[in-house]
Length: 336
Image (tube, rainbow, N blue to C red; front, side):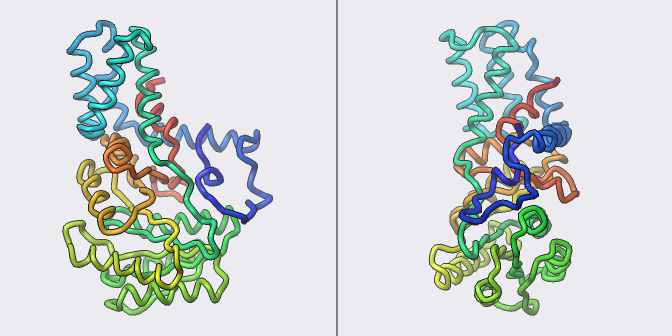
């Protein structure tokens, strides 16, 4: 059953709204099934690319060529060399030892299990247990960072009844604050902003003060979309984090990075660079519906140890959803 927003959020002592169906209930089951169907549709490009190589017939004869073809398919899906090597070596070992039957369907099912396990690396709920909970959003311009913030705010406000405040600390990009303001209005959230070119640390400082004084449940701070090669801006990201932490020890409680799935291995390098500048707790992987490089999810988890927590599979509000490793692996490989 697909992971839901209730599953992916750690609300601490905050009770979920009475209108929200409890996890595992019959009322919630159709939502979970619908989420899997939408995920499967969004991974159509990645699945097509893989299915041309990874079919049950691939394993009709188990030999060196079999494993080489499997490696090629995973590499083409941008699973990365390290991840691919681990997956293929493990599966080959299990087949040779007799743990997995030398049968096409059995091997494919075990492959799905291994991929799901890898995608689960380090996965934990988004920490909103503090009062207020401070979330820092990072990432490169064009990855859907600000849009993701708006959608997260909408879900928190409209599905969980939380009061949400947005901090517009992206003061470099023209119209960034306006875009975030539009999302704040749509989500029913408050916003703290300043003039273009203002000091991002100052905006973050004001946002934390405002969240406390207004009694907000969650503060989400947007940061300037910077290229991971811009060392001065990466240094500034670290400064914003230090400002927040000095003002509220232990904050930010969750740091997310927005990655565009269509960029493949470049997205992996971005995540790596951001993780060096600031602690990153999870990835929001956007535009998964527009790429054949869905394997980047596995590479991020394996090579960086950073879990994918949310995925974007379309433009609608409901198309930003919690990441479910088993659903992902199944939708990526299962042709039925």
